[in-house]
Image (tube, rainbow over all chains, first blue to last red; front, side):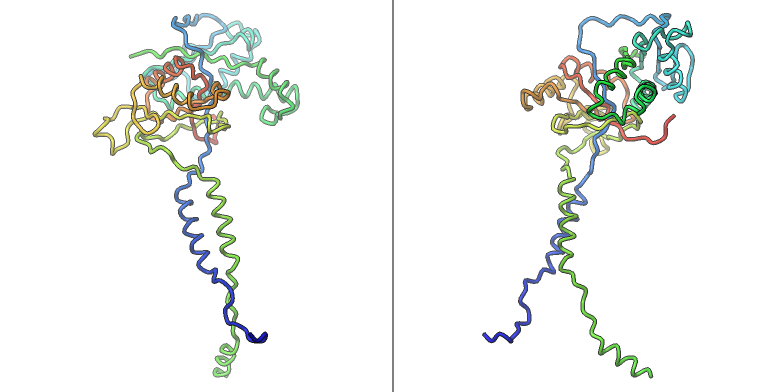
Length: 181
Length: 159
């Protein structure tokens, strides 16, 4: 063939490629549920046949949180709004023996949380979340004071520091079997 | 004057926009979505709007996470299952007693060295009652599946 003779169209027409790709794209767009699996992590106590001992309500190291079937909150015998729960819990845990009605040390302090079978799960999570938040805030305050950064900025190398903070403020939330009314 | 205006336009042959790179761009988007996609394996038979919380953590290894759904049956299943809270394991509505077996079979499907790291994600509807959740937790304790998470959405405002 003569060199100078140009063929008008020498390429594969890739115009429809975009359409095909678009179709696939739309399929995946509709099917995708980018789920970020998140939640409150809890470790359950191992199973034992015998009933756990009742928490002594008069004990200064026990912080009793009760929720009834109407989602009303009772903290240490007082009706409390959920917005106040974290502050109260923090004061109780980080008392260090000062107030004779509150805990002697964070390690000895136990939060006893008892719901009702009719309590809504939403309320249960809100209360549990506040109790966790109290611990996490105290841990962060300790980490800031000792190591100059919050727990969330700890890296792999800080595992010893994290252990220290964890030992200082261990999660001690004990859940009693909900009452049945 | 007007005539010349038209003439000018006609003479100016505008070349079409080169779209040959369009498929590449679309393909990149496509790959992103393909990688990000988690195809739903189970169809939900119970309602599942999760509660909101602030103290949440990400679940790390998804292959080790097994799900238990709790909630009132969806509208189309109300005739079959009623309106009380129900438990869903995999694809089917199950009773409390089946949880032990479910845990055993899920655990057996994992590699032996990973079995102790199995996590249970409780996906419980906001409107559920605490009673059924406690029953499930007791069953999990009996089955020695102690690492659980209460699946929740992120809440921004803090009390």
